[in-house]
Figure 1 (cartoon, rainbow, N blue to C red):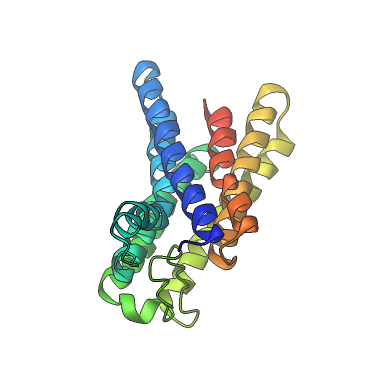
Figure 2 (cartoon, one colour; figure 1 turned 90 degrees about the vertical axis):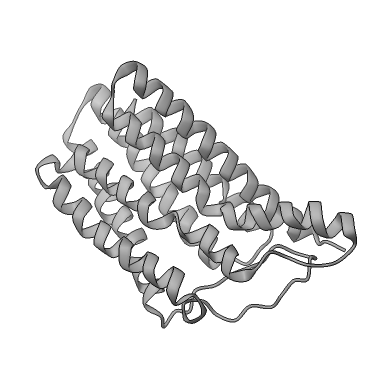
Length: 236
């Protein structure tokens, strides 16, 4: 029988994926009409960030439609789960850093994107070709819960993803906050919204990685949806 955490973890992941896709597509459609490159790249970023929870969302749906209907307790393959979850991190962060570079350091934008693209490629390579060493051994929930994966903290992928998330906080989050202090009026408001959005993303990402499945994680994941709203308001 499935647990309460199964519903909390699975539904929250599914909400984040669907919300990210909806916001991203809305921004992409609006960017086509307004011909705004910044809004277009935000739309792509929103979709990629929503897909960060595709692993648990897919496992949740698999358990519902396969395990419950057949009565046989099983989850999706663990390697498939972590790849579905983390293959979006690198391209998503690259778009986040592009947006930050465009707003905060346009002359250095492509250097910033280049550095994080290299880090992202290394992360992706290890994710797909050294998966077993990148994550801690997990206990198979046998269809009673959604898979809970944890990085091996001594492995390079953990260090790389920590660098990527911390960079969003330091460059985009704190950078937007400093920019807001230098401005007035409507521009100041926009950068405050951006600051909130970047901080919410960082907090949600860290909490999602560290918290065990449960009500607190369920609430924390709404940060992934809220950050899209604040970033969209700041960018549009």
